[in-house]
Amino acid sequence: MRKIYFFILFLALTCFTSCVDVVEHYDFKADGSCNVAYTFDMGKAVSVLMNLMSDSVKATPQFAIAKDTTLNFYSALPDSTQQKMTLDQVNLAKSSNLSVQMNLPKNIMKVSISHQAKNAADLQFYLRNISKIASQSNLSAVKGKGVKDFNAQDLLGGQDYYAYEVTPHKFYRIIDKTKFNAFLKKTQSTFTMAKAMLIEMPYKVVLNFAKPVKKVNNPKAILSADRKRVTLQTNMDEIIKNPSVMNLKIDF
Image (cartoon, rainbow, N blue to C red; front, side, top):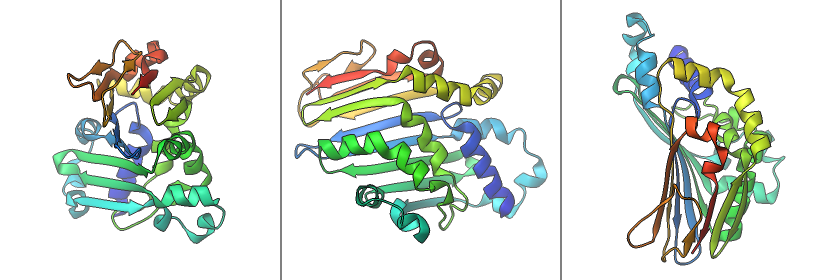
């Protein structure tokens, strides 16, 4: 069992952002609430890395184990961590979940981090603080049935390079190039590995709104015919060359 969990941890640590399909999904409701989810699909990376594994490892019973598990952040944290959290951090953790789907023989390794924001202020707090809370709360210690030693902190860390402004009628985010360049420097070897393995690095942002969007400032963003969905499709190579491609200013 240890071998298979070590492999999962290896994927989580080395494949984040540079070797996965990343999708940010926002569903804005008429009452002002919003469901937000980050999904990290490592399936393509798994299919490549499978070629590097020995047949003896693939033949083990642990390799064939399939998992589909959801953990609440707060309930999964150790007591020592919970005691150090502020009330706002506790509320955020209680309304956030970590889901893991794993079936290595079928090249499935998907992680989703979701949150239900009550209103615009709650969503802005979440977006501005989730990376910080992940670090301070020691989410790398999260354990649960089927997710032993899974490092959620590394999955969240990359979202720290955005500045957000969210109100009931707008969703603005601007990438902080200084923080982004620091992130690139930290993960440079991983990006190099991904390119060597010919692993693509797509990144998609999907925002659904309860009413038509009035204005979108990003020329790459696609507005649906009913003006209620904004989709930004890019990849990490393009983002590295031009970080501003991830900037979004949406009025609705």
